[in-house]
Length: 449
Image (cartoon, rainbow, N blue to C red; front, top):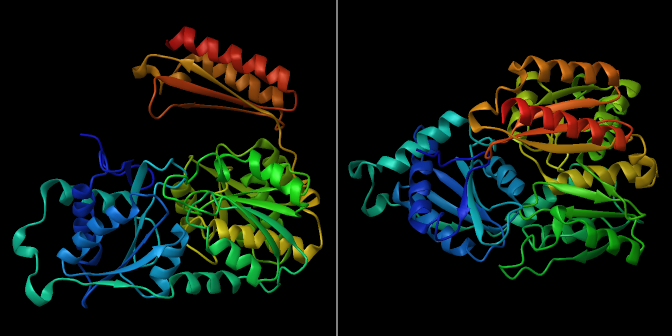
């Protein structure tokens, strides 16, 4: 049986895969599991992004929450990280976001946070899923005065923006900022935040109609923002995804500044100010080898995890690190928030620009991004995890790593959904690494296909 919860909550096409009935059961089961130890009447925050299906699914979720006697506090349209922060700030028992992040409008999802604002561990998700599948015993459901109520929060966006402003000491006067809101959850918060701090703000894709979220815009489609930065002469461009838990940047020349470079810029400033715990940044195996080279030169330590922000966060919490993230711009600043926060990350990046008086091109130049080449090898599905068991494949990988001498990298990993092994090679010579990646992929196909 396929697991309901994926890497980031329950997601699917709204009203066919993610039906109101399923969302009602998720609300009911999630509220029961997450508030079972609560001695008072529990409160659960509910936020959403701008998708047309949001209101329909919010109604179903709230009904499920109220059916177990919990109060549903509706925040309306707010970024995902706002729900994580406000769950703590309002001392709620849990938070839920209705969003499918960077996916197109027909998709939606349900993601839970615990009372501390953290995403749920697998075992808690499993408990919720088990209740969704078997249903809640009717004897456990209240009636009469015991049924929960819905309440609308009036100051959610204001409280979140005020929190963000409190994380820096500077204002942003003198900066010209181009912002792509992806027609998503940042469409109100981003302009308010940057304008109140004194920046001159130029905004695109901030007119959501329920259908245009992430449509050729935001952090997954950077070309329009790159043009827009050049058109309006901005000092920086910032692109959020649909639920604003990630951000990518564009420098004053219209060149992309990805999550690795944003992490490097913020991390070096934190190290300089004595704020970077253990002088360490947590990244995933997909971060560019140029990050490693820069880190060695600047006295930084990198710790790598599997792909996925949940693995980055687990490592940060386990070892006491304060900064981590992914190339995609999903960056966690644990001193301030418990999940990836695009607006918070953008603000810290702007703060470095203002504090140092440096242009983004200068700051981003600290790290050279080495070329990356990705090739897919088609294999039998039962063999896709066995590539390193093959002596010839393993030997070729080791020879390549030795050849690069720390200035290149070979990464092989199986696809999560297809009968493929993905071969990624990084190095200084793109033509050469393309040839070697193709050769290695062909070898894997021959041996395991």
